[in-house]
Length: 412
Image 1: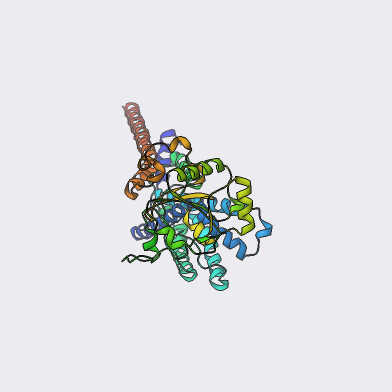
Image 2 (image 1 turned 90 degrees about the vertical axis):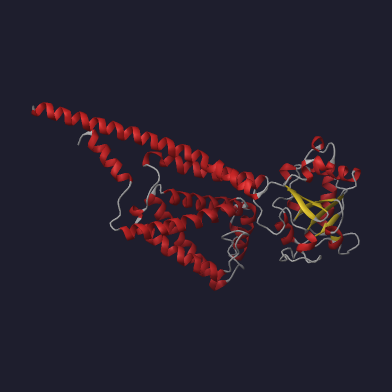
């Protein structure tokens, strides 16, 4: 077989033709539904890897295997599951590595369906957390959802050759590696800073008092487990804090005994800044008295420490510690431990300091940036791929033409 015939065969194999048109439509409908679900599921968990790790930790405790595993298991599983789901979803959507992708998706759905069947029967956790905080499904709903996805994954697995591919085989390795790297970089950024999109009740723009039902509102109540107890007097000062005028800084640490002490000096400087500018400052934690006193002794903390609900504080900000900035009871910004400002960033008019208004980017602009960051390089790869394919096809056509001319000359 000559080089021209080999090139023809490779081009034909790049996109296998399904036997029936109906089969093509069914398989690709299932393929796109699976892809969208996997992309969405992986993305919402990936940008909130710390939140998903809390759910993984719940599973580990429920299965009684805490002592068998290292402490970092929950966050490793969180990163891994988010990346696998997102990568498989994108690969299926684009149509690359069709056989491997279809087989991996099918076996993953078998595993997840069996797991959710056990969860339905044993009920070790309240809900699976498969869509993070965006869509909360109970265990039976999750199981039925997985049954439907399992059927679709089986159809795609049996007829993977009917999956239409948007790319040629020689660039597939670039694309799937790019997807993995992009997702890991994005998850890591959100882990060390904060989720770029906040789907939780304590998101920027929420009025705490209204959301808790302390003020009349037509909105649905969403924050039900926030409270602040003065550890000195034992009084509940929740309503006082969420109704205060002006700026309020909440230093949130669900457990002080495991909180990062990397930026303790910056926190103390921020407290001094709040005193000078008459800004309310509170530390909220669920730690017991002994841990609170130990924290004050280790860090030299002089700010008031209040008791809060552990689950509520974990939900409030995905950082330990983290900052939540209120203005007249409205959440105007949230800052991770990695982004606590230094004294040079706390200069000038308060209204111009980013800490007190830095979280005002619109969801539309943020989504647009994500699309540009992710699809921009992919579109460039696709354009390059099409250009190379065009050149290759053009060379083949020239080679065929030359062979035909040589045959004609021989015959003459």
